[in-house]
Figure (cartoon, helix red, strand yellow):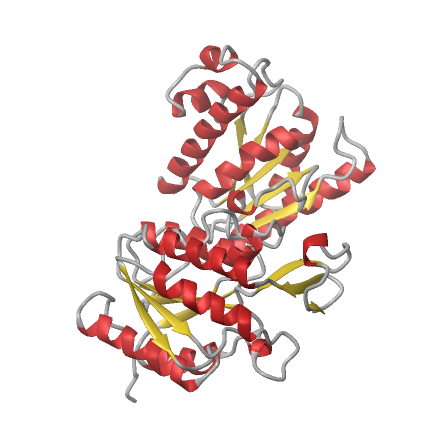
Length: 422
């Protein structure tokens, strides 16, 4: 939906406790040329202003009443119900063409609710959360919408102050500007999602992307450093892809080893649940990431270590860890409702695991390959190659599977670019 010259912004918050901040935001949005639409998620009290969508409308959208929500048990259960209603109401307003973006304000309670609302809106709809816990590790990856924007609500405990005013005014200008300039997602060609790490670690996309584009597909590559995989999972859950080439599963290994650099427990599951055809490979599952600025986890203290930069470092896992990861991959692929091909590169799964490279571990790779052979089961099919994941053989194998699926009608045919003849 293309925003008008006066973007309509849904403003979400508890008006009974944050009326001063919310009315300030309302006025700033109007001054910026937007149209504020107030959605009140108060439970016990009422705001000193008239909300466009009051708490009773929110409760009704959750299939209940505000009295029942207040009597639900505690503040957590009550806010979960309000979140359900607010998310449903926001989604309906967007479907009806009534809003162009959203902004929410809150501490932990308000942020918890706002995350659900943001996920209820499709990618391309500006979503802004002003939060006292912006970017905190309290926010699990699976709760974060693919295109969510956040800003720390500095000085945001009680009432307006100079720091708070500065933050709120920036946020209001940002969401109005985003809604005014947002380009709608218009897919003219079928979209193939692909996961990868930096080109120095996994480089198959360099050859695969032009081949897929020449076949009439748009290729979207996701960087698997936590939020990249989360974005891919979120879009897959919405059925946004014609096919998924998930070749970098490091986030799954991270999650299983307690790293914060992960995409949540449902990594490698959403495309399968949606019935989207998947070609999968185990790129970089032998590495576990953690913040460089923290000590190396004790259980990995004797493993090969590499500091990528001042933010991110990696260690390699041993044979038994790799066997455990292989079984988890097999279990996740078995949940799929669509076709799945698993390409197993027995010659290596990331650039630095080759002979002579710092992360070479022939025993660990052999253990993983052996376990993976038995872990892959229906509906997935195993395609083992005696080559490295960055080799031309891997690219050729992937393209052969993909082309076969297209020929069989499992993947929609690509759309050639329109040629304009003078």
